[in-house]
Image 1 (cartoon, rainbow, N blue to C red):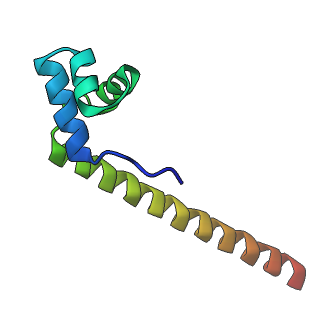
Image 2: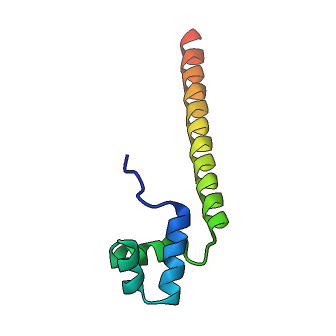
Length: 87
C-alpha cells in the first residue's frame, strides 16, 4: 500500500500557503507538483486539521463497519445453505 509522504497537518499548511501566495510558489516551497496542490485543494477544501482527522477517523470506521456487515451477510448465507440441506 502506498504510504503518504505528507501528514494531514502538512497538507493543510501547504493549502494555507497556497491561499496566501500562489499555488505554484506553495508547490515549490513544499516540494510537490502543482497538480498535487490542486488535488489536495479539491479533497481538503476549507478544512482544518481537526476536520481532516475526523474525516479520516470516519472513513476508517466506515471501512470497519462494511467489513463486519459483509462477514455477517456471509454467515447468514452459509446458515441458509446448511438449513436447506437438512430438509
